[in-house]
Structure formats: structure tokens, C-alpha cells
Image (cartoon, rainbow, N blue to C red; front, side):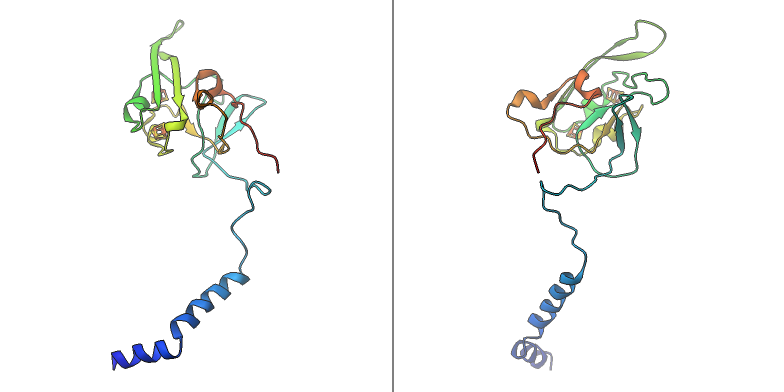
Length: 169
Ligand code: SF4
Ligand code: SF4
């Protein structure tokens, strides 16, 4: 009986018809793809950059774009303590950080912070392990550049918008 049903399905192209019905259903739905770079979607990341304040604020998205360092949105103080946890957990060895004692007051800060983004696989482990929320994924994804050196981000560019070449529409 089962074999007969399988034969009948093949004779009457039942599987093909079912497949075409699914395809037809998607024709009528709203498109989710965009014609990049002519169209760009508004990607929400965990952190939104406020250029006028040079600060990041927490967002609710899950997109993992270029990593950035954050400052305290209230005080403008750098959040990174230079503890090196992100450097140790990174499976691709993208991060090099050196910590030092703060010149004034208690606590530690980063003396240097280097991110080699061309080795980064955007796994977000560094973000998850950071005890102070100093490193976050931004919504920046247009990272193509002409030289390898441009993929190395240091403190200066990690706190500000790096000079990314935007493709023309
Ligand atoms: S996102 Fe992953 S691969 Fe990229 S720097 Fe962080 S830990 Fe390393
Ligand atoms: S970004 Fe976070 S985990 Fe990495 S050194 Fe700074 S405080 Fe530590």
C-alpha cells in the first residue's frame, strides 16, 4: 500500500505540485532581501553611537558588527580596565591589551588596546566576558578597505568612528 502511494505521488507529480505551492506562497509575501548596496537596512546593534557626544548607548539588537570601546554614557569615563579577559578568551587572538594603574585615583585603565579586525569572526566572546561592558558590537558592517593595515584598530579609532569607505548607491 505504501509503495502504491509512493508510485501514485510520482505519477501525479504530487511532490512537485506541493513544492510549487510553497514557492507561490513566497511570491505573495513581503520581500525580506534588499538590493545591497542600492538599498540598506537599518541594523540595530547592542550599542548605538552618538557622534555629538562621542559615546555609545546600549541598544537591544543582536547584530554583531565592528567592535567598539565604550565610555560611561553619564561621565564620559573610559570603561576598559585593561584586565585582558577579552584578549585571553579571543579564539583568533585579535586583541592585544596592556593595562596600567590610573595616574589619578584608584583603579586601572588600558594603556594600549589593539584590535586586528581582519582575523575577527564576530563571535562576541570578548563582549560577553568583559566585566565592565567596555567592549561592544556596533552596527557597522561595511569594513572593506584597500590595505591590511586599515584593519588594525587602536584606541583612537575604537572610541570614535573609524574612516570606513562607504560604497556609493
Ligand atoms: S568577536 Fe570573537 S574573534 Fe572577534 S575579537 Fe571578540 S572574541 Fe575575538
Ligand atoms: S575590554 Fe573589557 S575585558 Fe577587555 S581589557 Fe577592557 S575591561 Fe577587560
